[in-house]
Image (tube, rainbow, N blue to C red; front, side):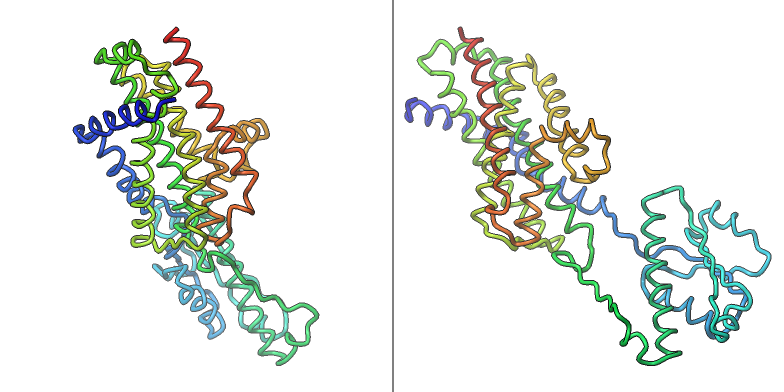
Amino acid sequence: MSPRKITAVARKELRQASRDPLTLIMLLGVPTMMLLLYGYAINFDVRHVRLAVQDLDKSARSRDLVASFVNSTYFDLVADVPAGADLGAITERRLARAVLVVPEGYARDLAGGGTASVQLLLDGADANTATTVLGYAEALVAATNAALVEEAAPGRLAMAGIAQEPRVWYNPELKSTQFLVPGLIGFILMLTGVLSTALALVREKERGTMEQLRVTSLHPAELIVGKTLPYLAISLVATAIILVAARVLFGVVVRGPYLDLFLATLVYLIGALGLGLFVSTVAESQAMAFQIGMVASLLPAIFLSGFIFPIRSMPLAVQVVTYAVPARYFNVILRGVILKGAGLSAYLKDLGFLVLYAAVVLGVAYARLTRKEA
């Protein structure tokens, strides 16, 4: 391969991209806009759950229990339900997502050393939210029980055989944005990388300049490298912009080595650009290239990478398919480097797959371009 020819093709492609504002917007503006949109729109944190309370005991103990729910910031008291009210209608009309029922005799049972029961009615239409809310309620009731036992027999808990002291590493506040933003980076880079190279080569076909390139002394490998390098550089700039925006807007700090993050991103982008080259060999128009590129990059990066949906909860057949999705491995590396502060040495298998994927898609794209030229 001739470096001079590659440089000439890359310079020509970079000049052409700079004259096309839509291309620059897609490569630089769209990633930031998507980070803003998805970063703020996708949030699994459950806060300020609308809570209705039916306190039939009207005692200091029952008020303390209700206060523990409200003071946790997980629940907002929106209604005090009188006795005999239709509790089902409250959730049906979405007046509250949860209803806490404290039965009569609650304080008496506690004072007598017995077990006092309370009831929590949840709107289960959204199963994930209901499960999260149930976990919050169970934790609050457990904390209240511990306080009551300690109050009844001071020092008893300290003498117990097991003392639980949970600690959450890497994301102590359990903010979903800390988990989602690294996944967004992988999803956005795959989408923009595939579309940029796919549209660039198909544009040459539509304008008739691809045939002119083929009759020159350019080797297919020189054409591929020359076409890929400008978009690789632009994608790396877009990555830097995304990381800065993630730090400023969502407080996502890169705790690991930047060099390791750069290396993993570089390999991932090469694979994404290679997939875009392959799409360009299949599509004959920019509209077709856009549709194929969206299906080949968007859907796997969202649904099959573990970005939103846990892979371990998928059917076995789908789990097998996820092994062919590069975003699955890149997300693992991103979350390890960004959130845990780990280096690439802990993720050599994931990096190895990204290298293998990039080599395969580039090889297939090269084979198809060479065959077409022949």
